[in-house]
Amino acid sequence: MTTTANAPPASVSTTPAPEVNWLFLDLNSYFASVEQEVRPELRNRPVAVVPSLVDTTCCIAASYEAKYRGVKTGTMVKEAKQLCPDIVLVEGRHELYTEYHHRIVAAVQSCIPVTAILSVDEMACRLIGCERPVLTAMDLGMRVKDAIRKQVGSTLRCSVGLAPNRFLAKIASNMEKPDGLVALTPDILHDALLTLDLRALPGVGARTEKRLNDKGIQSMADLLHVLDGEHGREQTGELWGSVWGERLWHWLRGDDFDLEENEHPKSVGHQHVLAPVLRNPESAWSVALKLLHRAAMRMRDEGLWTNRIGITIAFVGEGRIRGSSPFGPSRSESWSHELRLLECQDNATLIGALRKLWDERPQGPQHQKPFFISVVLADLVPNELHTLTLFDAQDGSEERLRLSAAMDGLNHKYGLSTVAPAAMLAALKAAPTRIAFHSVPELFDHSTKGISSRM
Image (cartoon, rainbow, N blue to C red; front, side, top):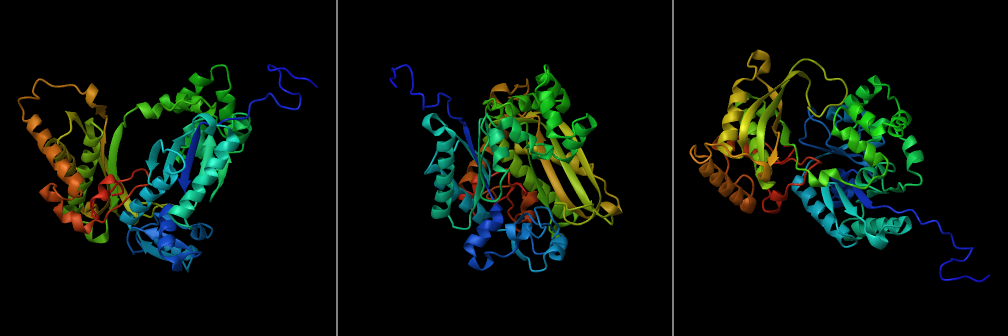
């Protein structure tokens, strides 16, 4: 058979190979895996990482050996011991996990540039050019896995997801754990999504699932039926009651645009479960200031201003929490309140606002043992949208901002607790460093002591 330059041989398929645009990497049982890496005696044993070695707290991470026995993130320590009597409890060493995080990033970077670090155990890489054909991308995923094992540690496993957009790539990374490699290409996307539960979608928790159920969406098939309808975009937006629904419409269809990349955070906050020694109003106030200090620094680092501050406090009580809870002990109730602000960044204004909120907390006999505190700065706006007031140059705000900037510079250089409000000093040693899975505290690069996201 003869061919021309414009006509491929009959034996060569003219159908283009499926392509993907994103590689998403999720470290498996990250904290527990790091502990098993640095302590070989823990390998192949059920391990749980905990904030402190007491039964009144919960597991913040569990090895797969523990997960197979029913122990998971959020399981109370007392319950974990019942499910798995031979479980090994390890107090979290969060500076170590941050160190390993940076080593993992470097290993991934040896294979492909990291586009976004999404948390201490998640990152995403945009694929370009010849990296996009699915077979090439899968080979790249295998090379990333191999680089982590060889350059960082043999016990560290990750699940890799490949897909047309970052949202779907994250879904793919969750489909096979541990150590999975899954590609959701456009040609199989619809059928693959049908195999999932609604809770497999990032951002869909118990409350959102119930709200969808109440609106007639009982399964992924129901949701995809809406998406595929004539007015799917509008109807999906109505299901969520926010712009998130319209984004989901794009993402589940495989559209490759990442709205989050061009948006600033709408809020920044930190939370902490208090150790028993801190469960009194005075120590809890110090911890609340510590959380505010950390959140305010993050906000200023990102060039943002806040219009609202909120606080949540949970108190030790006699009631029993149903199921596993990150709060720790049983609680009688929680209390939340917030305060509107003129756009601000400075510590003095924020501390004054937090003080007002704190003074409004319930103070009866049943509210003397706070054990959980969350502080949130919300309604954030970027520098370019910040609205100056007529009084900015007259009320001392410029001086307060310069002071905050100077404090931030010292804390970045020497550690987060170098310069801080005097009232929070009581909490600096008593409250250990915590890392939330949704953040990586760069401040730990300069200090082994600091304030975290969980704290």
